[in-house]
Length: 242
Image (cartoon, rainbow, N blue to C red; front, side, top):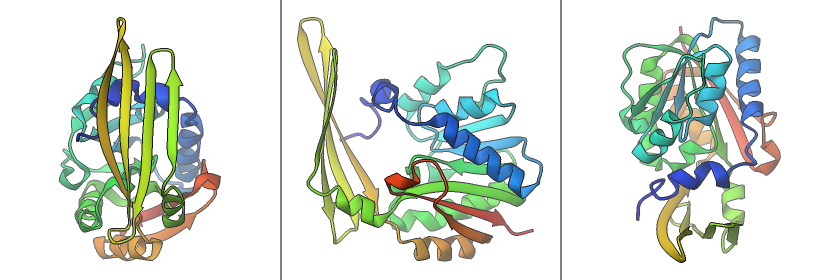
């Protein structure tokens, strides 16, 4: 089954409780603490572009990358009058290919949990290539304990014209949370059913540090002061070596 295809047009409605302004505030606080110049930013795995646009409204020149055409179509339609539109690129994280370097790359809402462990070295190598020297990498991930705790749970989201059901199963052999999602949407007097399958991998923090350092990043920090840190969200920051 596909991932972020049928879900794309309902994604923003289902994630209305995500504090995007707090995510943008957190990124900006890290920029100020670093003291460098931050004008051009990459939002990796940008999804429907809500955070991308929020940062653009704050004056940053934005590039948003995502592998889902359907999610990017939603992002494109969020144009804000008077705000320079982000450049949206349809690229997977492991195939990231920019025209030059950016001052910082951000990746939010556990997007990197969707990458299998064997893909992470190439993702970090490409991020190192396209983040300027002394530039920042900021991302968050769900912790292994959080993902494991979802095993066996069933979740329901319901509105007048949408019913979303998803069931989570944690596989210890692959260290991955697999959840099947069923979307029932009203079409006239009938309901249509579509399905997606999502997989999030439980990456160990020590392994992430090692991969980042091997890719050429240093000053790797694990942080628990970011938005939704109380919901199993671990934040990581790193700098590209000069």
